[in-house]
Image (cartoon, rainbow, N blue to C red; front, side, top):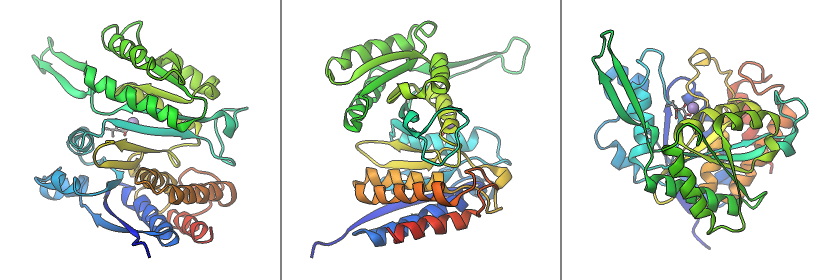
Length: 357
Ligand code: IPM
Ligand code: MN
């Protein structure tokens, strides 16, 4: 008999509600791995605000190298109310994305049947697109600084860094992804060519150039402000949107809202040639921490993306079917505290649906 495949998964529960939702994602992962022919070996990494407050360490020496030895990383959330903003976000989350060169942040925006969207008159067939967010450059590169800090003449500069290599690899990923997805085969570049005339000039030129290699993919352009408008007014126009780091950050929060909220929105930090990291995009949600009321489905959906990236497509589909079942049959709402079930009960339901599938 063929030996079953085995994957080494690094699990970083992290801060706030991270550990609660990751527990349920792992429950679903265990359920699906016993249903399908693969095994998982999980290693938990104690990283995040608690560790920082206890030891002063954000990303201890050697951790990155250790993580490079895994097939994928499943992350809960990073961000702690007692830690000054930026320390954990830059020192841990962005550091992982940058150092592991996860240059794509892939964020599907999908409305599942039975889920409520704030967009009146929009149905699941209207909300089904994916945002490809550049994940290592732009305003996130950390370029800039202060001059005369703390004086009335203070200057703060924060520059957007866009390299030809970084832009090109992101665009190529987006074209390939759009082609493979095989839906509308339309790629929209989201930028701000009318104001950011250097950064998005590079993006647009590179976009047009690469488009020639993909005659089967239709191209489109929208400014970021108009993109926000269309996402609300005509989300059915979108198939794949590619954009820079900052704009991608902003429009994917909007995307999460139109697909039913942070309770369901997942993303993947992808290095196509290295180790990728999957996470619910909602953050650590301190006010819900420890209450067993947060929705774990975004973490389950992140785990589903991870399976797809590992090549376990059938397992991924099985998890997606279970998520769809839970949202259409079992939950009253996707919002924390209003699901009609606790966090752990939702995880149990997902695992049951997987086991029975
Ligand atoms: C996200 C988050 C992060 C980002 C923060 C926590 C640094 O908002 O993953 O979208 O801005 O990328
Ligand atoms: Mn964000």
